Length: 336
Image 1 (cartoon, one colour):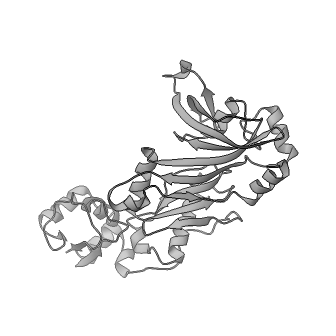
Image 2: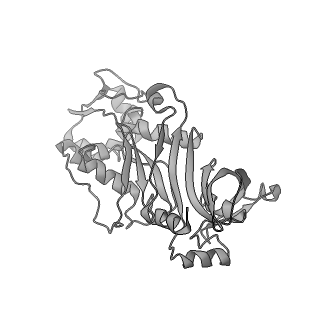
Image 3: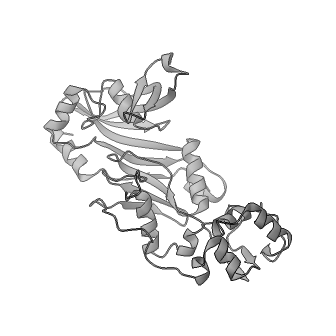
């Protein structure tokens, strides 16, 4: 007999889904048969498989070790915990992320410019891998838990955009954050320096289409693109300071699509300083003048909405992440 103790990370998933993660090679029909015969039980009782799991639940497998090895491997049976993450050594960016907030379920991280949020190629080391490495280093996750649950990030930033990224440490945390981003139940604010002077707050509405081949997006500011692969995008901005032909701007990202802020601001005639992809030639020239290798765009603030239940404690809370030193130096250089 083998025993699985459900941790907080696995809470909220179904019994059948968890069994499928432990015994990856077993067909679903095998689980139903074993549940029907009470060779697999939940808290000492017969189960059907669709039960929602809670922390502290006990699943007992009245199966031979050979059967478990055949369907899922023996590593988790040994009780290995390990304090190193089982991923190959990869070259990591020099600047390390900063943890802004952490509790039992979620992490808020200040991602430096230059980091991928999620890896684009097998050899990449992204913020996802960094999260797992961090949780291993502090003893928050074990190899056994990794066989059924992978912590990970819930929102993406462009590689050269810095700022707040939210990650789930538990299944409940991942589900909550993913739903909050999807349902726009939190507010995301970015700061940037743009070319040109903006005197008044405004809203940007348009239509965005991603060009996978060119790895950029195209913006239409009217409805001509609707139904032709263009989706609606919305953002709002307010100037924080204006100086010498530049504006220090705060942007609220309402929809959250690939390159949206950069593309919408450029389409509005105010490209982000340092953005070689979306700025016109005059804007690119200004970026080179200040020796910028990437856009000055920073996801600096998240404000949570109101919630009930397990995550009600986050309701109305605001978290901020400092801009990178290079960003602050350019602000000073421009006179902000």
